[in-house]
Length: 589
Image (cartoon, rainbow, N blue to C red):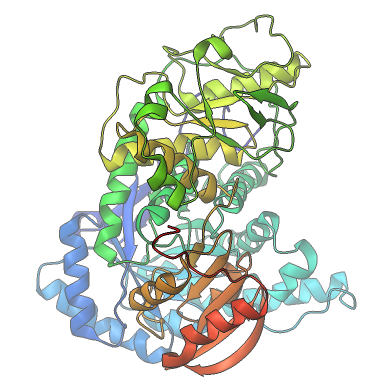
């Protein structure tokens, strides 16, 4: 039994209901047969009542159904009363969520005024040092008893007031105890949340849901799948809803594509009852992306069923499918080669290759149906010679993800290692210029790449050939399959952020966007920042008001840098570590 009914056709995971607020008075129901709920988070400081009210009303007007506020201290928790009262006096009924880290007392105060509480198992009641070498099973059980003691007052208050709760694990902020036992892994994220869920269930509190957020789509996908599987093993009634999101997704097209890879893949798995797209932009920009993602799902995941086969991949642990290497149109692909970008003859003739080259994106080989084995999805795989690229034939009625999963499994069952060419559509005549096409392509191809399936990509949804090629490269970057440009892991800003995140991203991007294959984390505070940017080469983190801490990997190397000097210091740090490249001159560009 996997995390859902089937890997080869769409079926939504059945869940219980979570009630947020009073449904008859603007509240919502999450889960069961309800539509997926769209939410966002304020960038305003929670102590600034006027700003919070204004931003909440703007979000509600944009179609946001649930609004979260950062609550870093007890003072901000108390101010939630004023925010809620002013919103209700102006006719707003959108439920509010308090985001709590470190301070259980703030959660208790917040629960008096808002409809939902988010807690992080990594720091709500499980902080402090933990030595896995000297710890014993008895010490581990004692730690769980201390968590229950601190957690119980919030559970009892939420039961009394009818409040909902999100138990939200973050890849970047697991406790030392969990890290010592499970490591910084999707399993650790799932187990951290399950500990709190077991306590809640023990005390007959069930109005909660989960989230498993990471800045890497692969980690995000694996963590949610693993949690769904573990919940199904826990008990038949342990089917609590999921809130989906890829945290620190970034800005612009990159942030949207990375979100589509992670969130879209999970929605296609039938997981997720509420979503948030975390962009380092104004909060209202997140809502249209959520709506576009959700409206795309029926089209790209509806269709014929693929035959059921034993899976050729482990959905809980990424490993690229093993294939043989071959030469295709003069380009080596398969085996240990990077995932290649193929183009049609039309795209090859019309794409602006100079513009693409300036961004280090290339048309690597030309696709022609005659040079590729085109397979129909059917119970029996046809005979396929070795040394040939394989793909699904156009006109296939099976959704893209399920068709290519079937192909990978059918090839494995037949003992074949032919490389696979992924397509983002089997109906290339049905394409558009809209952002929705970008999100569809990212969802479909990113999902397969995160499963380890695919040796080459063919993107045909966008009409513009140059945009189609660029999208292929961006999907490879977002899915962690190939790095060709600077990647920014940046938080979406909230009431904890210690600097203007959008302005800082712009300044850093202006100085560093020419770098190839460098990851830079830009985090507004230390709550999740250092952990969530663990995959980054360098980090820029708000350490105190007006002060920045610079990181190399997970290690802080320079503290308390004045903000006005911090970008220069970051550039100098990159240079000292031999990762700097001088920007090209206009002539070279």
